[in-house]
Image 1 (cartoon, rainbow, N blue to C red):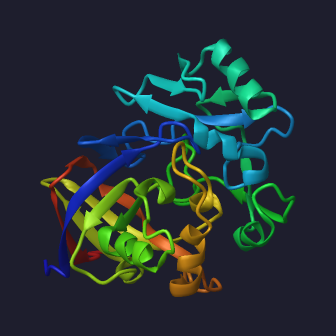
Image 2: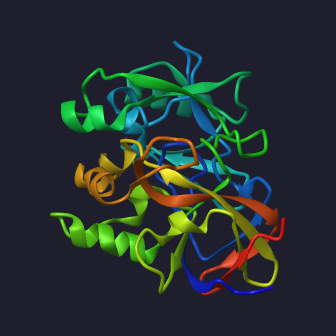
Length: 284
């Protein structure tokens, strides 16, 4: 099989609870459902029955003050802004989260039937601010992912160092932190910035076994602009791609700001930092 390009795994990240801060990894198993333990829990809003997401920052930006971690891909703990650390499923955690978020919520490991979230229109958030009541679109979960998790679209998200470095160079702050774009995999590549957009339809063979198929560019919401734990708000984290990489995420869609790409898992396997990632034309 011909090799289109070769990259190296530079960073691995997992987000056990949707819209909370995640954790860095050195290695992890990957199957059809994505990285082991990734997006297996979410915050459920009792008032609306919807999944809470920082994509609607007016209500849920405080989720990014909480950090979720899991030692074994199964047992999840949440560290709250006051530094309390409790396991998912603990009623005390639900009560503390409700107090921190100002709404009655609970952690769920199963999405309710027909679960949705609200995605505030990102350019209106840029214009009016994170506290503004802007228009929002209803988003269904995981149309390109297996059931049982809380992915917006597909189970793996990746971005390249070239893209992050280009955003940083174009940003007044001179930085583009990995955490803002919430990828699972960061690839160190010699390809040009934003080249991931052209990888749709290619397969990535990573390490001895894992094969991913790139299926679409990742349209960006307001989340990169928000404070992430100690990281300050940064509207340019969205303004830069809105100016320099406005492309259709999928054929037939209007151009929108994109950073990184979504992928599905063709062949499960392990992945670790330093693994080589070869890009090939898709064989199917």
